[in-house]
Image 1 (cartoon, rainbow over the protein chains, first blue to last red):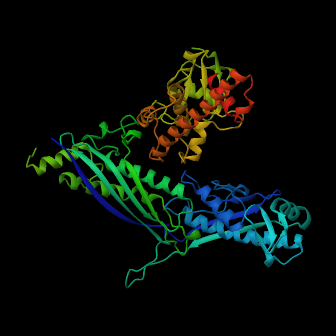
Image 2 (cartoon, chains in turn red, yellow):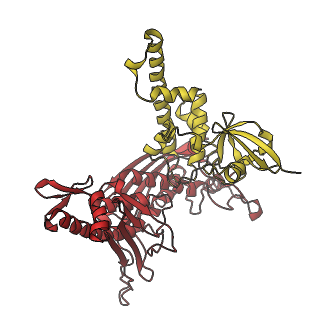
Image 3 (tube, each protein chain N blue to C red):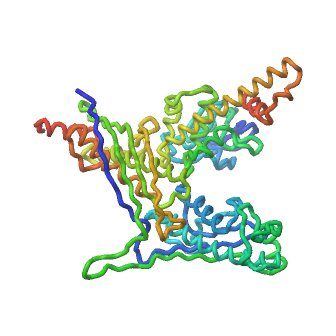
Amino acid sequence: MARLRGRGYASVNYPTGMNLGGDPSQALIHATTTGTFVVSLSSVDLGQGLKTVVAQCAAETLGLPMENILVDTADTDTGPHCMGTFASRGTHRVGNAVIMAAAEAREVMLAVAAEELEVDAGDLETDGTGYIQVKGAQERRIHITDLALAAHFTHGRTISGRGMFLKEKNDPVPETGEMDPDSCQAHACTVAVVEVDDETGVVEVLEMHNAYEIGRALNPAMVAQQVEGGAWMGMSHALFEATEPYYPARDHGPRDFTEYLMPGAADIPAYHNAILERPAGNGPFGAKGIGEMTANAPIPAIANAIFDACGVRLDTMPFTPERVLRGLDELRGYHD
Amino acid sequence: MASQVVNLRVNERSREFLAAPGTPLLSSLRDALGLMAAKRGCAQGSCGTCTVLLDGRPVMSCLVAVETVDGASVRTLEGVARGGDLDEVQSAFLEGFATQCGFCTAGMIMTAEALLDRNPDPTRAEVVEAISGNVCRCTGYGPIVDAILDAAARRRKEDAAARRKEDIAARWGTADIAATPGTADAAARRRS
């Protein structure tokens, strides 16, 4: 009896967003009296970090610090329309809408600053710390807090902007089937190293090497989070998770976390992640979606690694000890 | 059976409330006391997100009938930060990107607090064992384990600074020359 080591790889091309009947998201931005810019959305952050990335997009476009951005989101009764958080579309669709809204708000911000400083708006720039200043004459400047107060109480203006990003519905060309169903595609590859115990059928994942091409990584730390979290989910789907894999009757299926198996903190492999950045022309600062795809490549990579380790070709998830052992029996010529 | 008055010392404050027999500690914390950090996940003791410290030990508060711990001392995530400053575990989670959706985070942090209280220098394996009863669906666990190890290192450094300060104070009658603002106080509060 032996522990057999194997290595397998798999690749994924993953679309950002969906075709639907058109795929829009909208954003509104307005400044409060004290110069905080509220980004109003109905998009939902499920924990993937949409609020952070959206705040980055707004701050970068406005030329203001992150501390000046407040993201107000997830109320679909009152917020600007968003199709939803799915299809790895949030960063791309909502990010684009927020950039549009912030660009419009920046124009107003500079117009009001031009009146306050008695210069042409075209001669103004932001310094990134909260000041709007005259190019080449930085001592002539105004802080965003003073500017917002002046806009409200002197000029009677709202420093605000509207953003609307729409991926238009695209129908296939009847003759060729050619179409443009998504905005861009991200690409990834996982190499998995596993050990298969040929006595117990248990598969252990030892290493996972993940390489991702995702346009621009707007927030590299959160990209790493998504990659590792997704790799774990992929491993979980590959080896553990199902509602009734273990017994012939559904009655014996898992009912709770004590019976529904998932890898725990002790079961995680060593991760090696690489991010390749090739900005997408239509993405917010070049970003594509990285979300769902992170759980994709690990699964076939693990299946291929099992095949490499012991010759068993499994095509039904999860790859349970029972399925590995049945596969080994078949290779050895044993039959029930 | 009738409801009864239960007394708990929650995050250093005496709290008194009514509870029907068999009410989970978690329900009392959330519903009677308004402490919403501990989450109701599986409600049967297998996900760990309701973890709080009961007389210093981590328990799944969904499984504790509150009338059976009358008079006990309870610490929740709300009692971890001091005076608006995050403690070492919270800071390490924040800076180490150890949270995503956040639903497991309160339980993870309280489990880590209990671990570091009894073992200031845990190995990676000991951290993994400590959080083996806590389910996380987002992070893949790696950043959480890293953050707890980081918190342990931060806390040891603070404790060493506090000991140095006490040592100097004992010898010279003052600690001002070696004071690192805040650190000694934080360590002393934790030990008390």
